[in-house]
Length: 162
Ligand code: GDP
Ligand code: MG
Image (cartoon, rainbow, N blue to C red; front, side, top):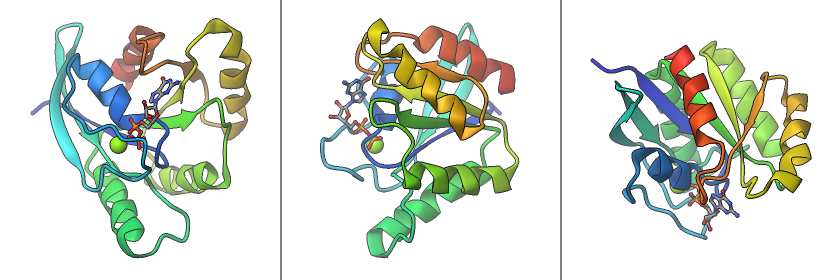
């Protein structure tokens, strides 16, 4: 059975865009409206000849209610069955209180975490990615899910944990 990578983070940070980038095709639903990926969706993926399963999730909201709460539960369940977690942050916004809440949830799970600093579309923005060292999760990998920038280095780091 291929190892499982859960892709988590608050709504609109670009999780589904990143999943599509890694798959090399548009399968995960991308929307400008936060929280569109309501359930866990699994996709078979491959990097450097190694197969793994990627689980795209909806966002995880602090004090989530109703549909948001369900989304949060789905994200947590995805983490529970994962071998490693790809935590996606919008580096152009920086770490928000919701991101910090996700980090606390992730720490409890004691799974390997790879931090993707997304929306670094150009090298001038790299200091914004470096600011995410402050989350205490180790190296923030600057990526642009839209342009594909940095995703090879990110996937190499992911495969070391899977
Ligand atoms: P999700 O809710 O975390 O799954 O986020 P989506 O993948 O649906 O993306 C939310 C929005 O962010 C969409 O408008 C995407 O086009 C945009 N987006 C995603 N990745 C990037 C990126 O690398 N750079 C920029 N500039 N926008 C991005
Ligand atoms: Mg999504």
